[in-house]
Image 1: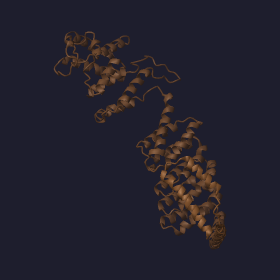
Image 2 (image 1 turned 180 degrees about the vertical axis):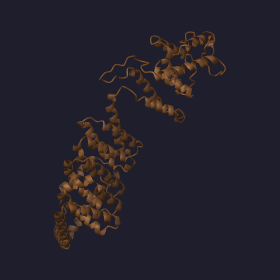
Image 3 (image 1 turned 90 degrees about the vertical axis):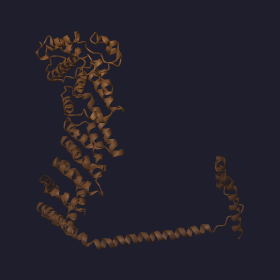
Length: 507
């Protein structure tokens, strides 16, 4: 079967109708040695004179004429042929390989079978080791890429294999036997193409986008997200500058929403790489990316929050100082929450930022804005966090702030002390405000209750009829509701209400 597989590959590459017919029958599970009636008639005397036998039997070469013809061609190897005669000899060898033998009888035509096998191997070696076997013999050096001249046929062959694999009758267990090292090597060699397939690139990106959309907003189940993102990382790396609006939209509407999926850990390294590649291409996207991360920042998932912190540090490595100034306030408000987290891994990962030299340089240039945000959580963690490792890391961060701007550090310390001292007064003020609101609510409730009792004391006269209620009753009757029991009860209920009102007025 492995030998037959090579024959199939050669026949598909030659793109002849007869070969594709044999290929279809072979791949569909039928005997590849049983040709159709049309193929039998096309042999032109190459088949056995006994071709009038049962149609299920394969045609056989005659040992006299056909074998001698094969011997003559076999003695003319392709590598030794002259350039003028190589094309004709190549076609002759292809024609002799069209002869199909009867393999039901292993002892029949053994010599002819061996000759054909050697010819097939010769064709295989020649096609594998020589360029432009099918097509133009001269490859000019042009600035524009040379597209695959045989693509109209090759596309149909690819489409055929694709439809075959997608068939419901396709048996994967049988196919696995043929996915071997040789198959993988041949598949990789297909990438050695001069056709850049520019017309398909946009379609490929849109198809990948659709996979991501379905994964993010519908199923949250797809095993190949990491591999797709890894491929996209290479694609993004090759984007030309300036970036197209289509690519920016892909970043904001496709990549950033992938952060909210529960299974982020399965593909986060590849996703972070794609994000960083975009920022390296266009630094102006930093603000949109950082704000998008803050929008999807996890609230209770500590493992996911650590991954977000890892990605933020990667973004810091490529962040421009001017772009950092745009996002420093919302970003450090979130970092302050992470530093104050009771989960020691989250707090530890956030404090590791102060070990990054470039991060510290950005902080020192904007310390007037950052230190007032970070002072309170750092100071409180230095006193109250349960993990001793956090104490040491907080001390190093506060020491760095003190060295950068001692005066500002003292001002923040003094302000924090005043806030703590006035905390009791602020709490009393808050309690008084809530008490005043409660009293106003009680007063309003009493007032509304008194007004309600005044209205309920009015006595309706027996003859009074509410016009609005009569109109509503007429509308209900005109609707002809299907609930017959309810319609029968409505007049009785109306009479009962009138009698009750008369009794109350009599009292």
